[in-house]
Length: 242
Length: 242
DNA sequence: CGTGTTATTGAAGTGTATCAAATTGCGTGG
DNA sequence: CCACGCAATTTGATACACTTCAATAACACG
Image 1: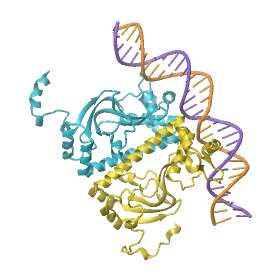
Image 2: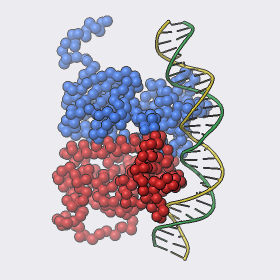
Image 3: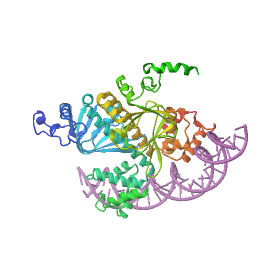
Image 4: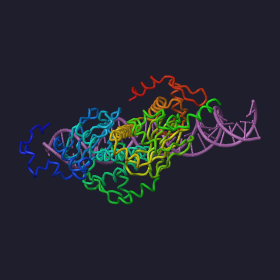
């Protein structure tokens, strides 16, 4: 909204060699699920992609929207969240640089089932649907890469689902702490964010964190920061709990 | 019998055979995710596939096994179930004729995360991994079909997960009844099976079913059979509940 | 320095698991 | 075909983890 003021035309000439908006210079080209396959692919992407910057809390797409293409994250952090019929918000996934976004709905020809929100300032490339489909037809190895990603997403989703059922709140919160710390340690997570990830309420998170602090797993005496001081013991506690 | 007399003649020449083990005569060839794409594909499958019959309760593969290929169901009913660390069993999916089985683990190069069990007598074809991979390389449309299936599985898993959290047991059981009746109505479901699908216990299922009967949604006076007598009203109850 | 957001604490209510015991229904073999 | 045995179902009592609501405190931000 505030960002309606667009940048001047300095980027207009694609021949500028050190333009960081070019795929050629993209830090995450090699870890990106599409662009890492072959030079021809990212050169194809190059010509049609649109790169946009999203500020924290900005929405990339909404649950219910029609997918028009594929997004890839070249910097920042994005969360996928789903609001249920009951009005509760659940975080499905957190995605960092190199990850693709919006592919599930694109391939199943369904509307987005989740809303994508930038957690921190993020640089995101958009590739139109027809280009993506062309790449799939001509570069089967890209499709297989996406297959792998979807397969892993599915495993994670099904694991998370079953673990929600038979693990109690404190175990889920412990897992959330470990997961979020391992994958996105630079981020300062709020109690609400942890609750939405662990499938519980902020109050329960707070009470559980107090317990964890008493037991020496974490430290939260520095403002609101949650510091894992004994991750190994927390992991053991999880597995010993059965 | 009469048919025994006729058969030998027909079977002498494989080209004119009505052998139901041939893909050509498979009832579900057109709805099968792999074989429905093009004649060349199922002819390729034909030469390498192995068809096996599984009796009820027999296991097709175990959680933790290494995937060696792909299964497709040509008759019967199979369930995918996962045993969690806590020892509880959860039903992830039910699969009928035409569905593929074991593809998730195959594509992510992971072990099976679930155990596949025949619920009723089932005819299942096995296609070796190298054949599947060859098909993918040469027939991109097959890969895209699988992409679609995986994408839908993922949506369903994520939906089921979030709905487990904020729907109460009676809502989940109502959904289970409707889903199982719509997809596999011929099956007589036990309270335990419903519980494993809905993420609750047999006792809670029983108490809820008694409530549903009192409210006129179902009838269970005929032995152990659960008969949906007012599905529409049950659906409305679900949506009105929020 | 105030104002809104996030965090904290307390008390109360409840849905659901758990355990145990009784009963019913079903297939199987005598 | 009946009786038997086992598994599935039913019912009751108890416990408790967690949500919910409400009120206060701490912090961040303009």
